[in-house]
Image (tube, rainbow, N blue to C red; front, side, top):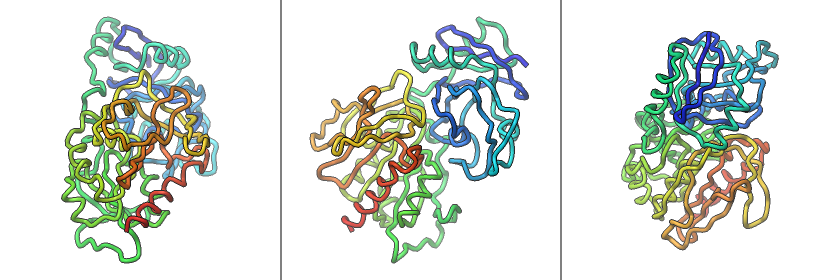
Length: 371
């Protein structure tokens, strides 16, 4: 059936929906990854967004139970040029189409994704609506203009856990009767939409893990006697989370902290800085990141639409450690006094494939030194 993609600037694109009937709204963005569509769909950082894949052929290797970053898709819609009708991979348990049907993902194919991507690159990511039930141009554009965007919206509360839990070997366990391990340092993960692979890699470098909701207080976190705190990735506008910034400020200098993506942005705000919205964001597995201390270039995975304005940081002891070579935006921060560092990219995604894993070891070493 015919499907329409309407942008708030009045532009409309057409495609086809194989099974979904209805309407969804969100911010229209694009991702330049050739693979990893299942990770993208289940990444909580995409909450509130309709994702366009720039690679023209999507779905050929199917889906499985391992390549997920949360238990279900978080995207508002998925736009592709051509959906593969053939699934061929030894790890595949089902097709991408069946997966989208199972989870009621609004999948649109036969779209000129090249034209849509070029439009977003020129005009910027913007609000939009996708629909199979409305074909009226004026109506669609009006809906797009009034759609929910991401600026000023707290999307984290829609993806964070509701209660604290212990994470061990891929399983969530109740925190009741929790006992801190004598042989492993405890890392408390501030869940703003944490990806499962972050938890896996923290455990791989030897941490015991407790995950807490985004609304947790510093007092609640410190009562667990953590050896370190991870500030996770997550969706949307960091300046819409003043409650989290307030609690992070209380943690500064009291415990080693490692922030990823939204975690970095919240650290920037906690240190007195500001954030700003990028024109069309960084979303893909091919972002060139330069580590300033060594000159080393990482090929990194990213998914963010906001960045820290380094010129706004009032704490002069903050050091920029990484930059994005495409636009020179800040990709890493470190503090000269507090045991704290962060990166804007996703070291757990490892498209390099292992370029950035050392950052988890670095965090473990920081925690060991601080003990």
